[in-house]
Image 1 (cartoon, rainbow, N blue to C red):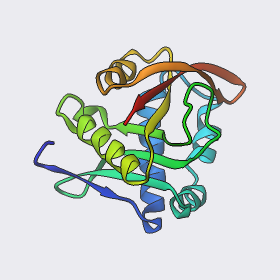
Image 2: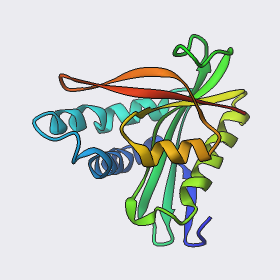
Image 3: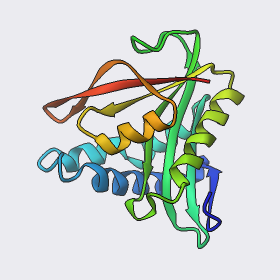
Length: 176
């Protein structure tokens, strides 16, 4: 990993930071393709600090933060490990879902996303999961290529609701 970054586990005290980072990186990734009038209501709900705090307090949830050497947050992954049932295509009895995985675009291509994915897989294994899965928009070629390079394969499809819009996502799976 880039020597000027580190990955750490978020705590409930980080909820406001995670919420702000999540909203900023969602807009960076999807703002051009997922505009107003649905963007602001989505951000206000999906990245509400109280909901982020509740998630961080739940057993099985781990949020990993990527920080620059000056403490600036540049990326994160939100994972949740649990027992079946899982989305169709995941299978098994214990798996980890990556609910969010984002890295500031200015940091792409430096190996940081690889390190964050490795940390997600290590976290999943430590929690007893034998597989890890995620959803990714079918029209997002860069993330799909990254996930394939990271060992994920398409295992099915899922729907992502954004306001009144329904996006077709791939469900991607990697065995651990």
